[in-house]
Image 1 (cartoon, helix red, strand yellow):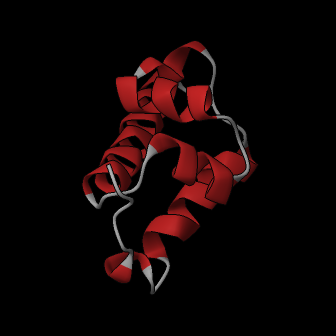
Image 2 (cartoon, rainbow, N blue to C red):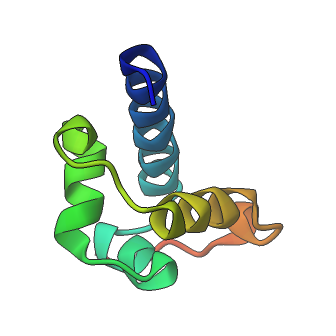
Length: 79
């Protein structure tokens, strides 16, 4: 994978995570739904994806969660 494509991929993944967080999901809930750890989601949200690219499973899980028809109907977790 080229550097430009790698940077674009990491920006897109970060954008997805930030959208999910803005919808009211917590990092922990995203991680549970995707099947990874909360620190992984935190790293993606902070843009440190380039240091270690997430697996295909994580990326596809994030995309599926964002594209899930219920995404727009997610009830925010209590604070």
